[in-house]
Image 1 (tube, rainbow, N blue to C red):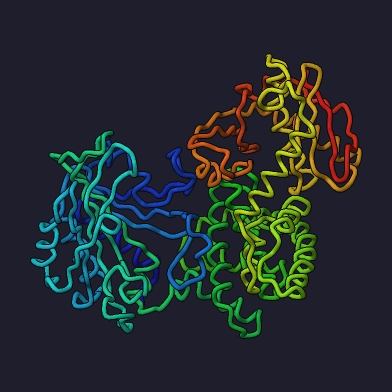
Image 2 (spheres, rainbow, N blue to C red):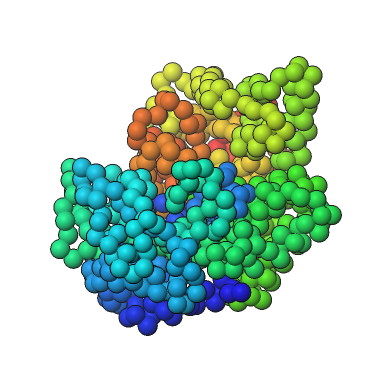
Length: 590
C-alpha cells in the first residue's frame, strides 16, 4: 500500500534526481486572466513553456493543486474530481521525447512497481497540419511496449495547443493501465469511457509554434509538458476501484455512511466529499463565498453540499462535523498539515454560508414541493418554466438547484424556456421603470456625477444582497444628476436598521478604494466568472463585465469611475413601495 503522500514525494524526488528543481505549489487562484483557477499543472509554467527564460533552470518538477468546475455536474462517479493534484515534469527547451518517455516509464515501473505488461499507449495519428507521430511510438517500443499495445488517435485525444491562440502546440502521448475489468465491447481500447483502461499520465511535445493564421511551424528547441494525476495513480498502484477509496476520502465516506445508518447513496457521498475538499482549499487560499468570481464557485460548492446532506436526511450542521474530520484527516496523513493554521477560519466561513443558504432553501423547498405535487396530480414530467422562474425570482432559489432537485425525482424543466421567462421579465421591468430618454446604465444624462451614481448602483445592489438577502433582484434604475433611483424585488419593508447597514456597507466599499475593472469577455466567459446578468441570445460574441474589487461583478455597458474612492459619501434619501414585491431606494453621493 502506497499513500498519496508517499507517491507525491516519490515523484518529486525521482525527477529531482534527474536534474529537475522542485517548484513550490501555488494558490489555486489563477494569475492567468483566461481562467478563474489553476486547471492544470502546466498553467503556472505557461510563460516558460511559451518561450520566456526560467531563471531557476530548464528542468522543473511540481505537484500542483488544481480546480476544474467545467464538469461539476458529473461529479459522483468513481474517478472525477473538482479538486485534484496534478504532478508534472517539464523541460523548457532542454530534453525531449526520448528522455521524457524513458523517465516516465522508469518512474512507474521501478519506483511504483507497476506491471509494464498492463500498460497501453496512445499517440497522435496525424492530420493535414502535422504527420503521424511514428517517432514517439518507436520510442515506446524500444522501452518495452509492443506495437499491439500502441494506438493512434486523432487531434481531440492526442494533441495540445492553446485553443484559437498563437503559441506552442504539438502531439501528446498518453499512458494507460489495464485495471483487469471486462471489455465493454469488441472495440474497447485505451481512450474508451468504460474505465477498463485508466489514463495515468500524458506527455506533451511542443514541437510546433501555432501562428495567428493557424499554421504550424516546427520549433528548433521544443519544450515538454507532462501531467500525472495523483489520485488516479494512487487507485492504480493500490488496486482501488475509486478515487474515493484513497485515504484522502475513505474515512469521511465511512463517517457519512455511519450517519445514514449504512444506507447506500454513493454518488451523493462522493459529491459531499469532493465539494468539501474543494471548499476547504479555496477558503485556505483566501476565497470567501460571494456572488462574483471564485467566491461564486465556492458558494455553489458549499450550497450543493448542504443540498446533498438534505437528500441523505442528514442535518445541515453535519457540514461542520465532516469538515472538521476531513481537515483532521488531511493533517493526520500528512496531506497539507498547514491547514491546521486556517482550520478555524475555514469552519467559520463554511458555517456562515450554510446559515445563509438555509433560509433560501427552506422557502424555496416548500414552494418546489408544492409545484412537484402539482405535476404528480397532473401526470406531468416537466415543470412550468414560469414556476421555475418564480422560485428563482421570488425565493432566490438557484435554477441549478431546481434542475438538480427535479432530476432526482424524475422530473425536468425546459432551461431555454426558463431563460426566455427571465429575459421577458427583465425587459418588462426595464420598460416600466426607465424613462424613454434614458441612456445605457440608467443614465438620463452622462456626466461625472451620473457616472459616479451609476457605479454606486452596483455597490448598492451588492450591499442589498449582503444585508437583506441574496434573493434580491434589480428591477430597474434611473439616474439623474440629483439622485439615483434603484428598484429591486423584496416582499417586505426594510427596517431602519437594515437601511442603515446597507448605507454603511456601501460607504465601506467606497472608503476601501476598490478598483473598478472593465473586462471584455464572451457570454460563456461571463457565466463562468459568476457575473450577474441575463444570459440569452441578445448578447453578441463579446460583452463587457464590470468588476468592483471582490464586491460586485455585473454585465454592464458602462460607464463607471476607475476607483470607488472617487464616489465620496453615499447617502440613502429614502425607500418606498412601488408595487407588489417591488421596493425603490433613492440615494445620492457627495
